Length: 350
Picture 1 (cartoon, rainbow, N blue to C red):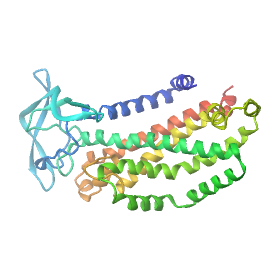
Picture 2 (tube, rainbow, N blue to C red):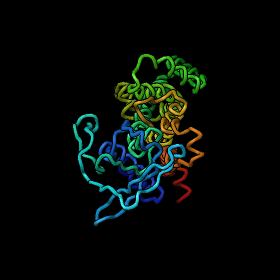
Picture 3 (tube, rainbow, N blue to C red):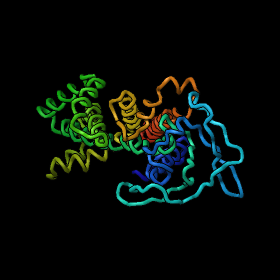
Picture 4 (cartoon, helix red, strand yellow):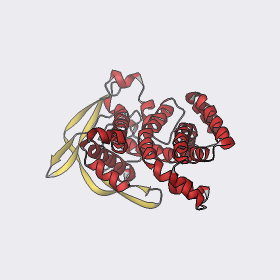
């Protein structure tokens, strides 16, 4: 089924474009430590709000243009005529652990100290925005996948059990779902974040945010899956499985899950942007990822100063562009998947 869906997506121009964009984004995320020239916490206070550096070709080798700060108050830099620094590829840099496991120090490109390369400029403390964008993608892009796996698992288990068994089990499960849905999600997010924040370090808040978003998001999925399970409950193949003596667990995973896989896949694709936006909103409000961590939402929160707009420091708003591209791509891919698995759309095309 997955192979068939992939083939159908690749046959459609929009589907191929979305998969290509997402593949590029997640490849950059997986290898962000290798691609980023600096750690997200590396500062250089003498290069605050440095503009994106220009790449020039000198002696058939790429160089970085050297800049001089002429007005610190206005964050104005001027290129120093004739002064450049060579870019070294696959050069050693600050030590890091690839995927948190493999010790390494090789990075894709480096510039000899004390010079620095700023592909997307620097922030108010001289930190490289490009490096922070790559490291922030680890949080912003992975939180959707992890959260949706938890949400869909809980939704399938509770909704499937409620629809399959019915009666008192269905009543109790749906009352719990209705209670969670009735609570305003924003206030519940703030309350849970405030209650749990004191017990976790800043670097552990990533898992806390994932758990909070998952606990809020599973209720809607459970109610929809319960309705689909009720329609499947009286199907002949379900009744035949029960007559043959298969256990309830086997019925759920062997018969219910394959018949709900299309919905789960489309719903997951369309729900991932909501998790990305929720994390960005929490971090933007100061309730999500905190320093020394980084995420796209936290970077936007740090770029909301009036100085960013008055001095036209556009490179500090690139996390917003990254969020926009990711959310639009996931939504378009979800629409493509929905067109593929929706039998009504297939009948219209025939």
